[in-house]
Amino acid sequence: MTDTKMLIEIPDFVTVRDLAAAMDISPINVIKELMSNGIMANINQEIDFDTAAIVAEEMGYEVVSPETLAAEAEEEETEQLAWREVLAAENAADLSPRPPVVTMLGHVDHGKTSLLDVIRQTNVQSGEAGGITQHIGAYQAQREGKLITFLDTPGHEAFTAMRARGAQATDIAILVVAADDGVMPQTREAIAHAKAAHVPIIVALNKIDLATSNPPLVKQQLSEAGLVPDEWDGDTMVIPVSAKEKLGIDDLLEAILLVAEDLDPQANPKADPTGTVLEARKEKGRGIMVTLLVQNGTLKKGDTLLIGEHYGRIKVMYDFRGKIIKEAGPSTPVSVAGLNGIPEAGDQFKTAASEKAARKIIAEEAEAQRGQVSARSGPVSLDDFFSRLQEGDTKTLNLIVKADVQGSLEPITNSLEKLSNEEVSVEILHASTGNITESDVMLASASDAIIMGFNVEADAIAQAAASSEQVEINTYNIIYKLFEDVEKALKGLLAPVYEDVVIGRAEVRQVFRIRGAGNIAGCYMRTGEARRNAKARVIRGSSLLYTGPVSSLKHLQENVREVKAGFEFGVNVSGWNDYKPGDFIEFFMTQRVDR
Ligand code: GDP
Image (cartoon, rainbow, N blue to C red):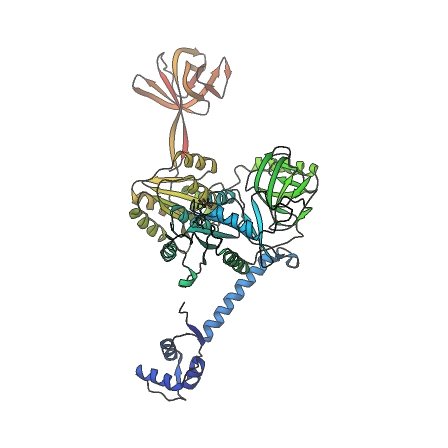
């Protein structure tokens, strides 16, 4: 049991009699307690708030002053006002509750799929004969007449990949932890991913049927990982379950409904339908089938869907049981046919008035994007963080920290967090040991974070993901350099790093004298390429003779922008005239590089 103290309200001055009454104890006991504190008082005597508080606390009460209560009430009211403002954007009268959307996260083999299956078997009302055979990426379970939508692709990779594409589909995360195995690296990762998404976490402590299960130990580990069980005065519900023995499933659903009640997810069924793509694939005989989670509005058969560059009228719509339906409201997963292409999980859908209107919108959006290339702020980097800060784009520098050993991780995260001040806060979304992985990169992408590594590297997949997601990775092997860079980034003191990158090498074969234009080197491009906007180094033997910009680049008398390996061409390097056959000309570009 918890030992939460009872709360009593005490004014600035209170008589011994009134204080005793407030605590529902005999005034004699209060007088005794006062005496043991060196205060002689009779029953009608007034004592001040501080004295009363000492006595009450001794007797197991927590005291508040009327001022504190008033301040708290005011704070609550301000919060509610803020909420009302947010909701006012929607027509409040049209908002109605919607089922919560739940995702299962956790370490591999801890039982995410098994739990999803058990809930599906036991709490889904099968519509058609034969029950549920469809797996469309989501389903809806029922408990006490209330619906819960489960996303069927477990794991934080899928969860975060969707977020990286802009989807906020999940309301509640179930963290599945096997009671015999405990908190594992991917459990910690899942916690970080859910927290970065600001999604509340319920722990399903699975496999309690096993003799080797050790719930108290796992609860200890969870506490250390920042999820303190509610029975230990924390605010994380930890529900013992067994997918194998079908134990605790109702408790788990109950817990979800409880958290959902608090969240009170709402949507407007009358709004234009919008939502997220959960899955999309081409099916034999059915064509392109797309599973959607309707998040707002009501999607109807015959609506024209618009998803990125794809569109199409909904020819047929199924619910998750495979039953044909005509319309679907908020939090409903549906599978639809009629789209003219395959979108990606996490893409957002909306609708258009007609296919013609859809084509027009797609063309307009493509056009708008073309003009916008440089207008967008782009991914966050240490170099430009300060300018974002100044423009009011952000106040938080989100970091993911990876280090080779725990012994360096802790001092790094501790010191980084201390760099926060009133103007800017450094938030560490995830810190763990080991090399930088794809999952780290996706978390960074989804949360606008930068990855800082100490004595670690990014594996090849992570590097590829970082370049396609445009996530900045900074690695160090000197700790103070890492701090220094973050510190400078916060103050806008980081100068961008430029580097000369060689793009090609050519050999000079002959020299042409052009009247009025000086000498031109007739070259053969050996490797890489030459570009008109590059710079060049003239090299003879092992000596660098000259460096300057390319002033002309010609192929067969024509001015060209570039020349590839294997071709002959003429080049003039501005400010140099003295080419000789056998010289090499190295072309390079100055590029801004990641630190
Ligand atoms: P996932 O990787 O998290 O989706 O885990 P799975 O659901 O695939 O389960 C991994 C393994 O654990 C499977 O062999 C399951 O049969 C087993 N398993 C799942 N839940 C339980 C449970 O409650 N008790 C026991 N004993 N085994 C379980």
